[in-house]
Amino acid sequence: QQFRRRPSVQRDAIIFFSEPYEAFGGRARSFYREILPPLAELARQHGKKLILKLHPYESRRERRRMAEGVLSSTQRGLLRVLDGPLQQNLLNRAWFGVTITSTAAVDCALSDIPIFLCRWLDFTYSGYSDQFMKFGAAQKLSAAEEIRDIPHLLASYSRPNLSDFSEPVERDRLRELLSGTAISGVETGKVERLWA
Image (tube, rainbow, N blue to C red; front, top):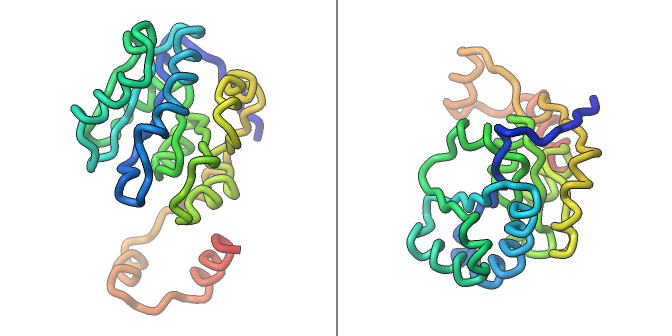
């Protein structure tokens, strides 16, 4: 199913979902330097705010200082740094999201928010990014220069098949799953499909 997303007054923010990069040997300052200025420029051109949504393990004070250090004074005026749990009201404001490999990609997909992965910076080898792209939860960016093309990519945004992300479970089946009972053939097939 094709889903065409049109910017609206309510969609007033570009959200970058940050992560505790240092925990995996990453360098947050260099990641911010590549990603935040072009996102701030898009925000300026399209009359949006740039929201830096922090992971619970990140320090708001430290990340704000780091982000402001890579942005111009005009760009800093567009920046908002948010910590705390991800809230639906924040997602409701999103024009689109960007991350390196945050599981917030799934939250965005479930809320019909296009999200773009900065694949050239993914150093974790967790496999998350590959899965996000395989199931249509996120779109790949291969270089910082592609960030400026996001508005054009939004025009061809294709809504993911949400049934690939989750499905309801009956109470007894949930109890069985949580009790540690062996995975049945049906679930095994799903797991094999995920990693194929």
